[in-house]
Image 1 (cartoon, rainbow over the protein chains, first blue to last red):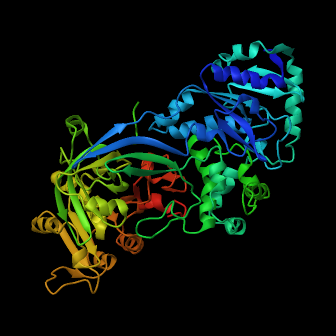
Image 2: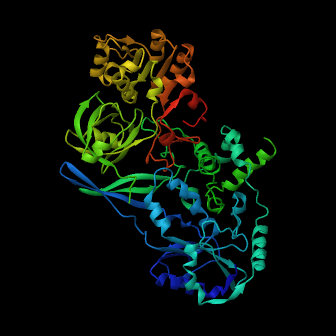
Image 3: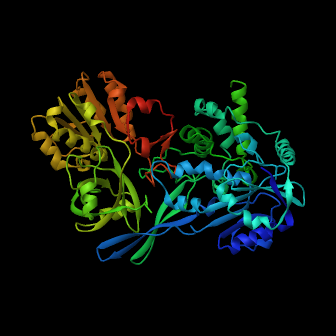
Length: 346
Length: 277
């Protein structure tokens, strides 16, 4: 299928058209020296220069979310449902492939026997327009290690390929993506042949050729729960949880109540396996009582437990946890060490 | 939209102070339809909530053979359980469940059942005990070994008496040395030691074992000495939980989610788990 060709300068105009259609528009913008995905930003502020600091997960799984309302009347209490917030039609415009890919990764978790309709409502209403990476956008990312790539279409409804500084090729991946075709059509400048895309893909993958494939990590982890690696690597972890909050696939949460007199809401809030309170029992016993154990849990969850349960690695290689760790503890380095040790039979 | 986080409302029909810090409730669902259709199995747990304070996880302490209500028993330790303990008869609390797996009571038919519990871990075992006693003909010998730190820490004292009075139940109660009172008629000694003295036969037997980790640790070798196979020793794991639905990410032991694949496991299953508890 041919790809629509357009000027990259017209992308904000497409975004504006999509916003005008009434959709909630999420797009990457510049704030200071950083880029962030923001909801409701001016389409003209679209900034696709590099990978944003936050992931797109907060638009499907909010940092804090009301899951029910309760009201006391004397001794009696009633509980009411609250509709999922921000569950209207949403277009995420300019997501990176590693962010888009996170959606199909976490879907089975939210639907594991019990269906979290808060997530599902937003997921069902969300269309992702992804901006493929011509080359690795920074030094931290490693999507090729986890079976993805800078042109991966996993989780994308529309895929934009920035062929050079000024030209973008557009591919409509899914039916939901094709519904956006009219917003792009008027900016079309002809078609791009498949060969140009092939070259684009190769350039992207070549820029990440130095990254290891994590194909033997799961097996190694399953045999090395007790291993020197955890103390060696993770002793310096300060347990700040930054990696989990920036991660597009981390999904652990807490449930808390917030009241004002007789009325209140039960909330689902982001939580992190890196916090000591996360698994602390009332008795004072804590199954993961030291930081290396908590760090190990995060690696296990992503590279052993989740693949066992759902057949997918719970990581898309976005590299945010590597780039933003305050103590320079690189998840890539830890997992690559596991891979290397598996390769040499250690 | 079905909201998996929404609790049923349940009214406290009976409240009993079991010990100085432990309370038990009999709960009846407010909604008639829920009351009619609610079923569970021994070993299932729930999320009990005081709206405005939060949720807390514990087993259903009553037997599934008793219809129309559920019972629970908890120690007031944290914010939610302290607040629950302050609730009175007639008050309404939240309940989500039943969650998790259960004791395979049907597999125990035709066998001797040995119950071993320590302290506040009697409530989950009690669910199985009453399940077995309500179907008494289907089982052979029933033995209960229950211990606590002190006489004051024994829960369900009135039922211990009921079980003592029954000729079809062998029950031994014990308190840790120093925990006895002048009137105490039971044993004095730790559960593993007392179990060794009682020495229930492992022939055609299963054991249901719940207690603090330290008790479990020293009881398992005794059961092994008595000839119990690890596949015939059933216990529960208690991990901190929030959702109870396999999503919030905190109760796993290695790849096993206690909330979905547990809380009931055999000693053999637990022996295969990584040391993550």
